[in-house]
Length: 316
Image 1 (cartoon, helix red, strand yellow):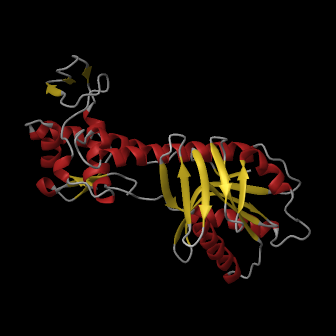
Image 2 (cartoon, one colour):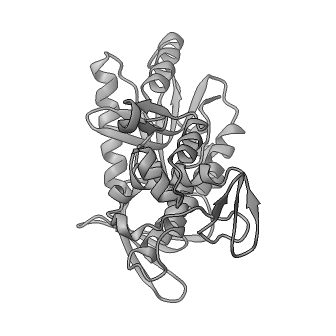
Image 3 (cartoon, one colour):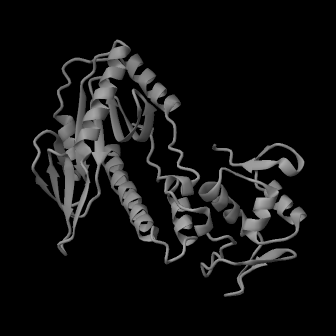
């Protein structure tokens, strides 16, 4: 049963739009594109794992949680958490192409691409061990002693695993079901009521990761972010406002509400709040009444009055 369904990384679209607003000559652009591709690949791998677990049939209740973020000793974010009355499994999902080696002393994940390029990443093993430790202590502090298992899942055959470490279980997608079915289930560690309570606790205490504004997270200068309204047809920035709609000078595409995505860009990329003056400058319009009406029609939170008013997104 699904406790928390699969969902794509919520700031992926905002990251894409920030990249579009960066100059092609910006030195951080390529790294941001790599980050975007990494997150997108991670989402795809996790989706595949969730789909496999949705097909799983067991003779006892279980819950699957995707991208669950909880405050234990520290804030931890589980790719996939599998909860039963007998045991819990933490799955770290890695969608990485190439030959993968897990090394120790120091812990590293080394990836070699077919063209010979070598990349070194943080190993998922220490993180998985830490998550298992914190979750174990969380339950012990509540008087519940439940076995905690962990595994690193490479869902696609595009990853060729050369495992130098024997510390952690490494799984392919097609091994997931048998791995779970072979876990001992002789005695329930918690009751069915405890299981439901845990599920409800996890959902009520989950907190989405908040990376906004993105220029702070990725250390981008404000001056490096282009102002203006994007044309959704040709992708160029610089749509102009005429009395009732926006028009693109490059392709003549017209839109009545192209400013909405631009204002959302500002609130997610540049600052958590926007004033009427900032809105006007960012959109490239002169009439303060016009920008005020645009903001008022966007279901934003208003803080303050008159010229000092700031507007924010509801999910802050």
